[in-house]
Length: 102
Length: 154
Image (cartoon, rainbow over the protein chains, first blue to last red):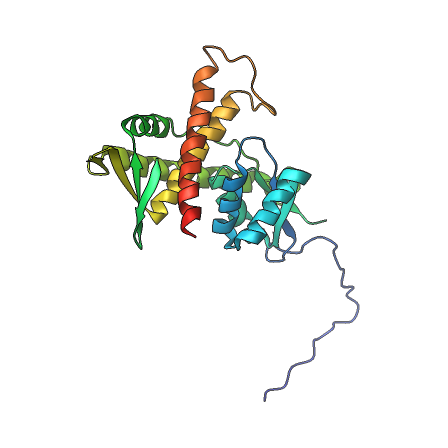
């Protein structure tokens, strides 16, 4: 078995940690669906099932959250994946956005 | 409009003469949602937000163009609707059902936007608003028929 090299730390360089996502690959983005009075509840449930591959129960749970609380956080993803999901949801004319998870 | 039969790949619907006419009228209204209507983010706190918004708008515009092409092919295909004893038979593949749902919801949401995105019940229809209200309701009717068919199967 090959040995794992110890990480090299260069003296004199301070490593800063950021509280924001460092790159688009980190799952720091929320995909949110917002309530509107025009999309049918059945339709929203159907779209969640198609876009996320969720079982009906989970899709209904999020649909009801949108309906009753005004919005639902559907997933937390990397920037690219979140963009992909927003595109898919907007393709079906749902009111969906992505927001930084802060 | 009701589901009469399914196969592995297709769904077969029966429509009355009037339903066929109404469905075609509604589909011809596509697209209705204004382009660049949806923001990518509400907070506006994404990196490269303007560029990413532009890419999203472009992707949605491409999608609309593709849907429109498919829709025109569907409307131009005389074999798509087959005359039957009591009206017409329409067959759609499962993927076509998905894009017809997108098309119908675009007509529904777009009509609602044209009506001023009312939060509650629309009051006081007039000659200007009635056609948009009609389109919104008709698109919703056909949408529900398709959804019931898809869900009934499950």
